[in-house]
Length: 211
Ligand code: NAI
Image (cartoon, rainbow, N blue to C red; front, side, top):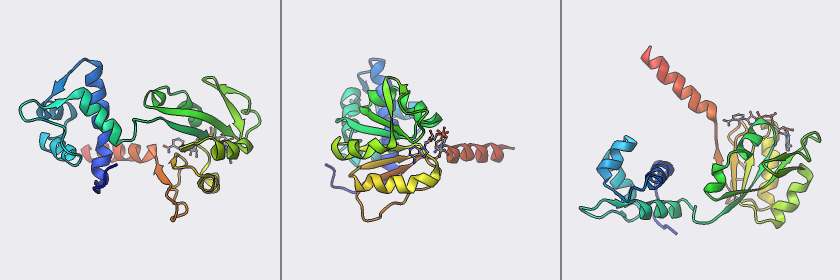
C-alpha cells in the first residue's frame, strides 16, 4: 500500500500509461525509454519520469523501462492485481451496453449481477447474465462481497439506491446517473461520477475555439 499522498492528476494519468503499456506488450515490445513512450503518448518524457517517480521510478538509467514489469507494477498501483466483483443497477440501454463490454472482465472486473425494476427486463439475459429484480440486490450485496456498483438508473433514483448500497457495505460506486453523487460524507465509499456529456462539451468548446 502506498503511504505517500499522490496527486489526483497523477492517478488520472496512470490508466493511460497502463493502456499504452498493454498495447506495447501485445506487440511484444520488451523495453521502452521514457522518450519513446513520451512520443507515443504525446506527453513529455520528464512528465513520465516525474509521474513514475512518485512510486519509486521503475526505470533504469540507460535501459529505460521493462514494459512487462512496468505494466504489472502500474496494474498493482491501480488495484488491478485482484478481481473486483461488480453489479449493474439499471438494465436499460447503458446498463446493457456496459454489461456487453467484455474488456472490463479482461481487467478483472467481474459482473456478478444486473438489477432492474422493470418486470419486462427481469428474467432476460445479457451475455448470459440474468437480469434480476431490484429486490434481490440487497441479499447479494450483503452476502456476495461485491466491491463496486455501477449506477445506470435515472438520476431521481440514484441518491436513494446509492445510500442503500453504502448501508449494505459496497466499497465503490461508478455513477453514470447525471448527478454528482455526494453520499454520506462519513462513509469510506469511493464514488466516481462519469459524465460523457462533459467530455462532449469539452470537444464542443475546443471546436468553437478553432472557429
Ligand atoms: P434507460 O431508461 O434505458 O435505462 C434505465 C433503467 O433503469 C431502466 O431499465 C429502468 O427500468 C431502470 N430503473 C429505474 N429505476 C430503477 C431502480 N430504482 N432500480 C433499478 N433499476 C431502475 O436509460 P439509459 O439510457 O440506459 O440511461 C441510464 C442512466 O444513465 C440515465 O440516468 C441517463 O441519464 C444516464 N446516462 C449517463 C451517461 C453518462 O455519460 N454519464 C450517458 C448515457 C446515459
